[in-house]
Amino acid sequence: MKIKIDDVTHPTVIAFVEEHMRNLNLLSPPESNHYLDLDALRKPDVTFWSVWEGEEVIGCGALKELDAMSGEVKSMRTSSNHLRKGIGRQILQAIIDKANERGYQNLYLETGSMDAFYPAQKLYKSFGFEFCKPFADYVEDPNCVFMKIDLRGKDL
Image (tube, rainbow, N blue to C red):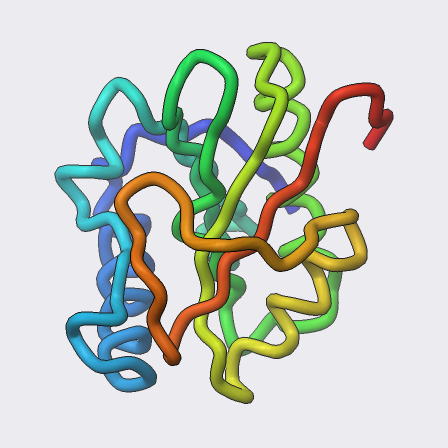
């Protein structure tokens, strides 16, 4: 398994991200989907990671800068054929490491509130994320939950 910073131009990565967007569209109504599309994932304020096993993309995740002191976890996904292998944990750790390297004090995320998103919520909680109010441009939404971790003084 190899995790790397990616420019989101490889056809296999593009297909993986497009499948991620399709899956989210099946789970949540359009107004509750806040994923970054391919163009947004390529912007300078976003760092994107892909996880490879041989020629197969098996996971991804991204870090979006909100401001000089905070970032947002985006585009977390593990291939359904590779669940419970620690891929999500590795991606999230890479994101947290980069956030710490940048000196962020806070790291936020938005995810779904439905049962399908409970494994993701469990992962985030295991790293110390806690539920919070909407941040940035988000608004209260029954289909979304918002989480935050204070990175100051934490060695994750």
